[in-house]
Image (cartoon, rainbow, N blue to C red):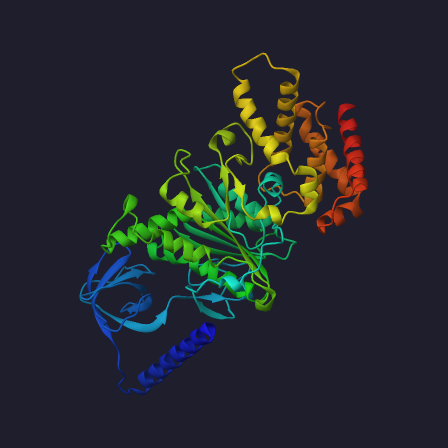
Length: 509
């Protein structure tokens, strides 16, 4: 019923606008509410008048610029600018549009770089979108949601094995600057090239050069065709940065309602929160903790709650959200990170210490958790890596204590040697993706101790040979693993023999 009301309202709005334009062309009088600009700031404008304006309604200025009605005070209206405020001055008129902010949606957006309104930024011509939708939409009701049961393979072994993600989950990626947060998100996008999962990368407040590099990387690896890039740079008005994540979510909802699976990356919500704080302070909203407005939690919760897995009667589609947040000095208990941790279904924490040691991706397994993904994990992972997370965390703790003692018993020494080899196996280079069967083969080899007799320098070559042995020697088994079938004892032994032959070749030189 709510969707029908929304469609009816937008149909009426469009009809009224068409009538107004027709009357204007015929020279006949029409009613119109206008206001007067009284103040122009960085990204905000104050207006007098417009007594009938509604919250989040679009306001059009004399130069054609658009703004968003944000503060509805008795005396004046505070407007967030969605376009540059150049040319707007006190005394100019502004008028209502009887519309809220909307964005283009549809298949035509795939492979394109657009702004928060769906306008092309890549110079590849206009976009004939399927339609436009308001960027704000109510999250699906609880009874419309289905359990998260299907894995979203990222191609990153440490995540797929130890911090798995399911389709419809919200998994936070957090860490200090330059620790690889964007790389992990882009690797997950690249890995969806042949899975049928559509991707949306939303850049909120990033540098233009950084966004251009992302687009180049996606295009170079053949992942741009099933991806929409929504860009709001730090040079754009803060209003564009604020609405960009909601626009990206609206684009994703269009596909979800068609029964398709979508992955949305928000890079990053720290800048999004800062832009909202800037706008709120400029509009004289009361500040709260760290000068953020009191509804800072709500702006992110109402965004991320729209990510879900729908029941079959609603199409069965899903939206998986990977919001990114930046920490300072490894403080994951800061205001914005803790807000997002409480909203999401788990977090992947990237440690700057691991990054500096060359452990890439720098995922801190002890600080990372997935509250949903374990139930969606392929059965083969649980068969070969069920206890690996706990064992690896214990190894990291034991390694930190072992630095203070040179006399170690034999069992402790073996545990440390095994843990170091697990760490080497979990390392991956930038944008390298591993299919699930190859990950299973590597995890089985290391947990069964086949790498224990190899030097750490031999592990990279051994990894490559084990992957080749699995894919080339056991193609039928790899297909069954990818389809989600359980790993039988015979399958386990076959993988172990193939991995053993590969490690023997490494030892033989």
